[in-house]
Amino acid sequence: MSSTYETAGRRTAAAAPAGVRRGAAHWLVRVALVAGGFAACGFWWFAPVSAPLNAPGPVLTAAGRLAGLLGAYLALVQLLLLARLPWLEHAVGFDRLTAWHRGLGTNVVVLLVTHVLLVTAGLSFTEHHAPWSAAVEIITTYPDIILALIGMGLFLVVAITSARFARRHLSYEAWYLVHVSAYLAVALAFFHQISSGGDFITDPAARAMWIALYAAVASSVTWWRLVVPVRRWFRHAITVDKVVRETPDTVSVWLRGHDLDGLAARPGQFLLWRFVTVGHVWSAHPYSLSAPVLRNRMRITVKDAGDHSARLARLRRGVPVFAEGPFGHFTADTRRLGPVLLISGGSGIAPIRALAEQLLRERADVVLLHRASTPDVPLRAELDAMAAKGLTVHYVIGRRTERRGDPLAPGPLRRLVPDLGQRSIYVCGPAGMTTTVLASLRRLGVPPSHIHTEEFSLR
Amino acid sequence: MSNRRLAGLAGLLAGIGLLVAAKAAGGQPAHQQQAALLPVAPPTTQPATQGTPPPTGGTTAPPAGPHTVDGSVIDTPYGSVQVAVVFDGTKITDVQTKQTPDIDGRSVRLAELATPILRQEVLSAQSAHVDTVSGATYTSDGYAQSVQYAIDHSHG
Image 1 (cartoon, helix red, strand yellow):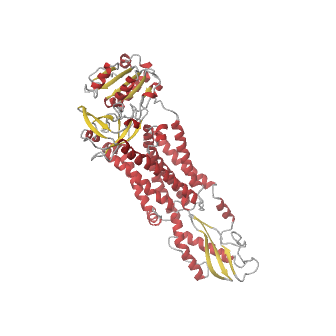
Image 2: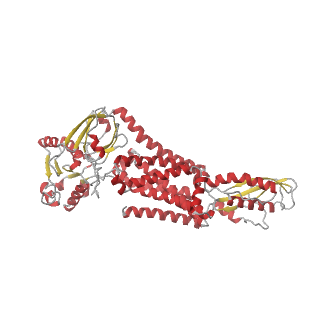
């Protein structure tokens, strides 16, 4: 990935994860979400509305209302997917939840635009008015419609800034700030559903259920995304301890706090970090732990490739840190085979380094293969120290053009680690490297259940 | 956008179309089907029998005292309209609203605005000949038709 957002320790998207060992619970969640969609349609189907669907106007209006109902439901699902509900994180996983969120986004906006167009067209037909005067009539006669229109505008801005071409030109912070306004959009749109929506104005039970649904989502979001992180801050009081420059383009941030093992963050996992200081507080970033968590200290290691990560180097001691998580299934305890091969590229060294220390402590047979274009390997001293204690480390240095052929092609990989078939394999690195490694492993006949990787990218 | 996502979106929109078609084809609410059985204006012979029977009203002789006659149920694209007209002899003393368009908040709001005006017009005109309330054409027309039905059936 050539984008500027790639940072050390942030796992980048593997085009097709060859297999992340994980339960099938996510299917239950999928079924529940689809069932919820049908239940939302039920509000529309059983609404005690007495207008017959016997002319174009009423038919268009009915379709528009259904589109709006489904759009509203999906918008709530969008918020819920990222509400950090522990059981959802456990059943589905942060990476997949984020991917679902990204996939559903377009549907929400298309449904809402359809809703606006169809309702306007419906009124235009029924009243025999031109579409624009129907639009004026809607704005002037429907209760709370102005709020909903502002919400719609916000949704459109969120959608446009999330489109691929716009993301390339926007900083992560700008995108994030705009994206957060979707909460406001959902809230603004709520009022017209309750005061204008035919499904809810005449049926007190449906109205109560709809309000309860919004209240449930709002309280989940408030609790897990606001109250829990704040309470956690008071309990652990995490602050920046020091910033260490590892290589010209990589920094480690050491954090201190109380009772950090209470976070239950395992090596290989990441947290969402929010540094409470100018230039950082408005966005949270996912960075992997680059060492096992100690009782009052932990560390992340970040490649300074993006606007935010470059500024990490200037963090001062004592800056408060909010941490959400831990997230991720990229952990040692999910493996099937005892011996392990760790493959990292560039920035991916952070979680791999943490995993190596844990595995070494567990006296596992570990081979670490690190791919880098320059000899400046971050944390190299620590890796060498671990090598002295039994870790087998291979550094594969040099650009592909300088070397003959790709060192991660099936042949070279097998020569480096002849027994890779008997090892659980963890891969973390830039998307291109990950794709190459996964393809090579497939060619070498490694079953997907032996391979651990995580599809991950926040946007 | 990937093909899979595009297919999902297309499926969603097609599903909406199918549901609307299904509802238009047969899924009318129960009271709507009932209402469809009743004659819609202009009525001919059948007396108003729906709802609460008139407290004193017979259907064979012109009643002398106050009595209430239900109007017909008139469909509009925004929902049904029905009134009940209170007579004292042949004089219209009150018009009660039994049902007004309810498809969305706008219809409910417009009906709330229109019905007091329409009631006043019926009371002063002592007939169903009322001016359409601006912005509430369907409600006004339905209201007038329902009142007319009640007048036609007030004398048995």
